[in-house]
Every structure is written in structure tokens, then in C-alpha cells.
Length: 313
Image (cartoon, rainbow, N blue to C red; front, side):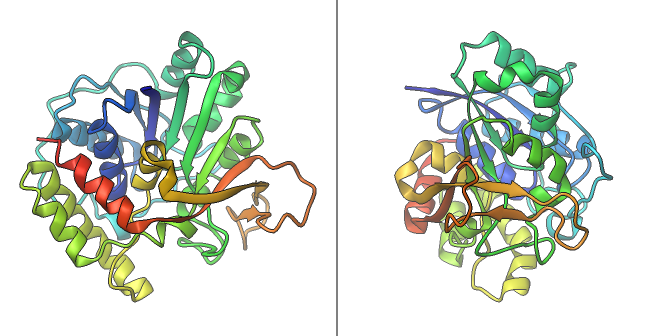
């Protein structure tokens, strides 16, 4: 049965690949809309990048909205040093002809959840959780209507990639992440512990470019640009591919393993701001609020990604 999803995103090369994977899978995923948020780069450019990716996919009927340009209580921190000044450096994608929808992205999320049948819409978050946190604060009645929130966020065994203690998406807006994790909504968290195990080795990048379509070439160029930072940082032969794991989980959950645990967010400490405090060993009696994924079948993940991208123009 087709699952209805809203993608909340800050594209970002890996975000772009996740969006393409979702849009290449219409028999599995009904992408109701895409909402941009300030994160990897500023909101306006992230929204423009989302429009470019939708056009690249050929699925131009999917609406794109702009949400919050800064975190709930902090100034925006961005990551141009990883993603380049456009946030989507690598491929030379044309300026989009498609326009943003006029409605604010947070209001779109609220209205959609109120109008669709309860328990039918999944929120897929690929960036900071600002839009979702704001929607839950503005309209608490939507929480029980959400089927699930699947997020690329956090870390336990890998600890942090933006600070020694924190993963980027959570670090940028820890207050929003805290709101979401306390919401009572079913949550699946895909942390660095998973994404650092799905590395884009050279033969996998060649597999994308070898598809022979525009999307495959663009994905290869995206990875070749963004991986330079991670290759130098981690010393591996391939870089993590974070956000597509969110969509892959929805398409083939058997590729992943994890357990239900408690996760809370550190919001007060300057030293460990944005840390995901994951009670993986169940040391406390705090309620288990998150299905926390721990590992992935990396070969299966890249097989799925390559097969689906081959469907696109």
C-alpha cells in the first residue's frame, strides 16, 4: 500500500538524493509535498535547491514550500564548508522554472495533517527539526494524527559530526528536536551510527553515473563534491550517505536493524549542545520513545538506490 509522506529538508547533496529516491518510488510513496527549512544553507537557497531537484526528477507536480528560516530559539548555523556555497555544489543544475507555493511550510504541514485521515501521513525529516517543532507547538492537535516521524538525526556510537558531541541536524535546533522527541508521535531515528556504515565507495559512484540518465550523473557529481570533506575528515575510502537512509527505511525496512529505546536531547549545555542522549543499554526507566536504528545492509542500500534512480529521466 502506498504510504503518504511529507519530506522536510535542507538540500544538501544527500537530501537531494533522498528526494530523488522518494520521487522515483511512486508505487510505494505518495509524496504529498516537500518543505524546505534553514539548515545546510539558508532557507531561500534550500528552497531553490528543492525546486531544482524536483525538476531533475521529472515529478514537477509535487509542490514545494518554504518553512522556517532560523531555529526556534537560536541563530542559524550552516554547513557551506561541506555542501558548497550553493548548498548543492557538484552538478550544474539549471535554475528552476517551478515556483514555490505561497503558503508557509509550517502551515502546509498543519493543514495537511488536519485534512488527511489520522494516522496516514508520515513526516520524513532530512534536516533540522524546526518546521516540525513549530508545527507541534502551533497546533498540538496534529500530534496524534501523524503516522510516524522518520528522521535522519543524532548519534550514539558515532557521537557527533558537527561538534564532538552532536550531529548537525540536532545541533542546529536542539529545542525543536526536544519538542519532537517529547511529542508522543511514533519516531524512527536514523543516526550517524547507521549512515557511517553506508559509504559511497568509488565503484558505487560509478554505478550511479553508469545508469546513463541525468539523475544518475547528477547524483554521482553530488557525491564526488560533498565526499571530499568527509574523506579527509574520516580517512575512509568512501563518505557517508546520510539522508537517503530515511527513504530506504520506508522502502525496505529489512535493510536496517535497531531497537526501541529512550532518546532525549541536551539543550542547556554549551559543551554538549544538541547531544542525543540515547539510552541504548536501557540504563534508565525513561519511556522508550524512539525506534533507534543501529546498522544497515550497505550493499542492499546501494542496490535499492541504484535501481530506483534508474527509473528517473
